[in-house]
Amino acid sequence: MEAFEQKMKAEGLSQAAIDAFRLNYEQLVAGVTGLVPEKDIAAIDELPRLADLKSKPVGDVKGLLAKTAVLKLNGGLGTSMGLAKAKSLLEVKDGKTFLDLIADQIEYTRSQTGSKVRFVLMNSFSTSDDTKEYLSKSHADLINEPDVELVQNKSPKVDAKTLKPATFPEDPEQEWCPPGHGDIYPSLLGSGMLNRLVDAGIEYVFVSNSDNLGATLDVDLLAYFAETEKSFIMEVAERTAADKKGGHLARRLADGRLMLRESAMCPDDDKAAFEDISKHKFFNTNNLWVNLPKLKAKLEASNGVLRLPLIKNKKTVNPRDSSSPPVFQLETAMGSAIECFNDSGAVVVPRERFAPVKTTNDLFALRSDAFKVTEAHTVVLAAPKGPLVKLDDKHYKLVDKMDALTDAVPSLLHANSLTVKGPVRFVAGTSIEGDVLISNESSEPVTLPAQKYKDSVTDLTPAKV
Ligand code: UPG
Image (tube, rainbow, N blue to C red; front, side):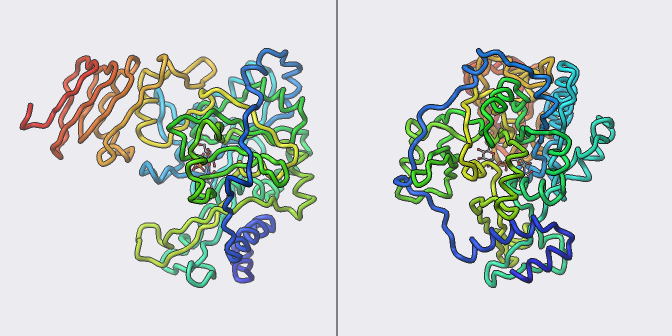
């Protein structure tokens, strides 16, 4: 561990970052599996629902908003969609990026409530410059506010064979990786921002993923969080068949605490129970509410570290060369802190509060007329049901490739599902209704003639047309 400590100190990382890494490293060396068998947990049946909270009077919201910060996790690059910049800089709707909409939402909340709710972006070393440059042009006032940016730590990659710091002299930047969003806690502490926010009277922080445009500041939830005086609340949503693989909420029998069981934490023998969505009904949306003075007290009582379960990622030191030496990237997840407090809670929220863009399929649907931007700058469904878009991975998985094939996104307002196989070019004037399949078996893109397609199968393969 000493070599890691020296390396981290030389890089100027805080003691909080080093302590958090040490805990992860100790778990790695001890071979902690983190497995949580079914017999150790109880399923969660009943939880408060946002819909029920809304029927109660909200109380002094303005006073609460003045004590609230909205924090967006913005450390990810969107590499799975082929992006080399912050994912939030991607254009999503009407020429606006995720970041534009987030900033617009904050300004709207402020203007509507007359309360200057605080705004914080957690950037990583790879997203900080791009994000600040963009915001300084589009929302200059916002980016100049005090403590608007929290830069998360970086974590040394661990050589998988020797368990020593990985080295890569050709490009030393590759010796570091982001420590996952669980790093929010050591970053808040080590940067001094936790103390500054608490000193400024901020009690509540609402944290969410920057790619989740459904995660707006909900005043009923804020009022509930304040009223219950809990340390930590997780917004969960009901699992559907499509969410079988994602982690679920449970109660640990040993101490009665709420916890998250991610799929990697489930022993093989219990996979069926893990995927049983009628038993384990709720998953984490990563919209979280944290009471800052209570977080501070907790960190002070536990030597500055929250004991979060380790996520061990096996990669190669050079991500672009799979034959380079194998490394472990040690990460933690923000939501797993639910088990660190004995008064954590969870609230069931409607699916609208969980609208993430994880793939180009999500982005294609969002850019269509099936979604609209509201006056409050949130993105909501314009159709009764979101269309299920399934584009061919080979030709559309990367944003650049999808954009090159999409002169105009078709109308999906009345679409139930759109499946595209092979390279198909979309042009203005096209609409999709019901369940539509378009295919092109050749490798050359073929333009889909602009017209209405309803409950149909269209084969554009040149020899067949
Ligand atoms: N992020 C950071 N720093 C990091 C890693 C990620 O800021 O070191 C950001 C990222 O930009 C994104 C957010 O964190 O905005 C979430 O990351 P992502 O990789 O998209 O999500 P997962 O980590 O896979 O999953 C989280 C929760 C999971 C929850 C899911 C909901 O861990 O429990 O179900 O979000 O989308």
